[in-house]
Length: 255
Length: 299
Ligand SMILES: Nc1ncnc2c1ncn2[C@@H]1O[C@H](COP(=O)(O)OP(=O)(O)OP(=O)(O)O)[C@@H](O)[C@H]1O
Ligand SMILES: [Mg+2]
Image (tube, rainbow over all chains, first blue to last red; front, side, top):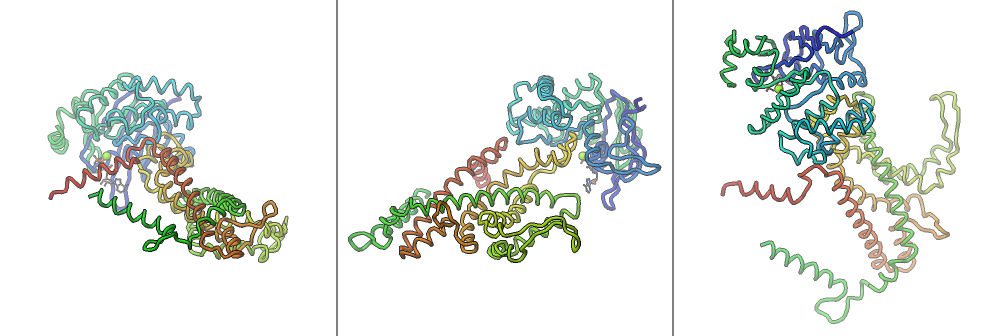
């Protein structure tokens, strides 16, 4: 039996020392939906995204992916952190694409993509290599399999990073400002790949400043400020007719 | 400018070289270096065996040291406090006491503990062994003593290398479902190697000479009926009987230089291996970017 929502956050709280970064986030994501998270710098977007695959621990509330607490186990009324091995198993089902790509510089493009499926999922290498090459073709980098990341442009590196995440066949993909570190002329290629993923029904949560992308691709947009969600809804409504001054001000700055 | 400096350096080098064979200001040769003796001793059996022992001890001690260093460094970064503290104490102790003292201790272990037994502390013991064979095992004692000491230095070198690796690498590995051990082995360590190799080269070359401490503590060892030790001990054995001190030491120095050269070449290839994928490894590139930075400084 599968859970009603793919992602469900209830009153998620997070603080770093005395700084409260997330002050009760509620959010649901359905299968096959694209969700965009927008907000000014320091509003807690990255922190929330990182809580979803347990790169950060949450201090309060609940975060479920496919009906399971990520990194935790519920016993009675309390949540207990799982062992490293079981946390890793949860993470393997959630892909993540980082602002700074974080490709493994000592491995070739192909090795970057195939390492985790072979070593973490224990899949046979011929199957994985075939899948990896198909994914490289899909992101337009079929000829770069043998290159090292340092030999690629930023946009190419980010597309490899997307292929690397996809090769794990995740049920959810998280993007943390995937185009913010790119030269403007390279942004388009990466966004095109993301759009085609969205069309194929991939469930994605995207932190981005690309309002155009959010308006065109997102099913739901959330606007965050100071650790709370200020507005949410269809991007055509939220991003075109903002109801709050804070969102209006934010849109004025980024557009 | 760089040509003038090169000319001076070459002149000084040639002059020094000549001074070992010819005495300036006088006609004739410089007799006190006794070069003919050097050629006579270069491939003396005692030296060949000595070089062999030096190589064996260095290689084995470094293998123990590197393995131990990697283990200790990963303990230092463990999430368990017991591991962190014990690794730190180990480094503190083995780095903080002289290697000579440690050698003497291991050399006298059989005297301090004639038998070693396994059991519960202060209670029943299951099994015990006599330490007689340990006492007489030159190689075993030397490799344990030098390896354990080296482990402490290597632990710090490995730890330093790991700290340099970008934290984003760990996060990317985690997000792909890699556990700590897998991420350490496949992602962190190979990248850390880039900064671990150069100081490890230093350590190996330094170990080459530290092996000279072994024979004075543990005594000579017999190979094929010849009493010998490491390179340094070989030199000592020869010149103490014939007083050709300088030429014999020169032979030992030549051997050390030869072994060091081999190590340097090996280091070059290992560095190249772990540098793959990194552009900044290339010295040419570093020089070019240095030059670019300097030119940007306004005059
Ligand atoms: N590891 C950390 N330790 C302490 N404070 C942190 C840590 N990570 C984030 N913060 C703080 O938490 C707040 C939210 O950070 P976060 O990175 O989630 O913001 P963001 O919305 O992603 O901003 P940006 O658009 O600049 O990426 C910031 O004030 C930041 O300084
Ligand atoms: Mg961020």
